[in-house]
Image (cartoon, rainbow, N blue to C red; front, side, top):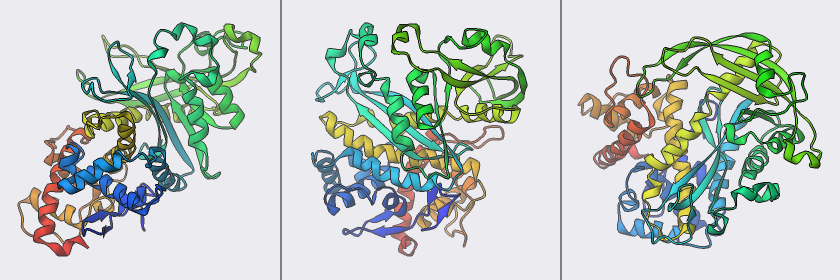
Length: 476
């Protein structure tokens, strides 16, 4: 199989399953190696993933098209012999292969919750953050290329909080680290970097929730690179004693011009950040001084907006990292890398709103767990298509669309019965798909987002299915 954009995508070749239905090559590449104890289960898994990807916002019966296929999907999710971790592991192996094509990758961690309070009959759920809400939690680690294209999952934890844990937050200091939910950051650091080729540098990126002394010490022990936004004004082995004081006295190493994305009430804008950097020794919190934890040698990078727009809060990122930052070049690189952290939030958004996982009615948490493992791969593919078009716009769209898809797309957009001999480039095809989803493609609209893309992609599947019936020679 040919690799696209240094391993971001597998070419969309197609095969037929035993029922004669077309199965795209990406589904086989991502999940065909799943070890589920029976080849028929693996074949069913691939077929379900392909169907869900074609109808990401539809219900399970809508995605499967026939009652027989839908019944098979429900039976698969209800099969206790199917291990959800094995599904994610198969995708992870494909991700590691893509990761190996890069000298540096970013491993972005974050946690989200899935709320099933509107399905009160679902068994096996637990309490969420707000009173009365039930569901489960998901902690994901998404691999990104240095320019921000999602390469796949390096790990995903899914857990249900016990009702007995309500009200014990005040006792967290008496609990062992491994018993705390915060241990997930350290555990994922260890799991996500496992089996990554030694020729690839992994930089784990996380928000302020990962500002945990044990997380930094684990990274140092494992000789791994981490980049975390600071949450606490930590004590230091430093003349300035505390983190924020040391950051304020750190030497200015340069400036960085960035573009701030548009928000609901503000268009995109360019601004300049002042960069400060220094090395510090971070001490353990006072309540843990009896543990005699070692000092954590870290680098502080403080990126601060000097002239924010009137009425707007200035951008201020204080980052802690195990990376060496000898000059402006490395400081700017840390800031640019951290700016990609929000893509893990977009991934979870795609998983929730794009794939509508919270709308599934599968009766038990175990069944939802298996469904999540499948939808997690589909959400990655939708997100990757979005950002690959921005990073490698000149690539042929045949890397992500089948012949029937791009031909149906072209003829629909151009109101023409005859497609061209060669496919358009990826950027053009992505804009056309977005137009099917309601994107106006006006001057100044910028690149289409995930939401219009999944709407357009769903419509494209209907168009390409009809095209394949009328033009069976396009199906391979």
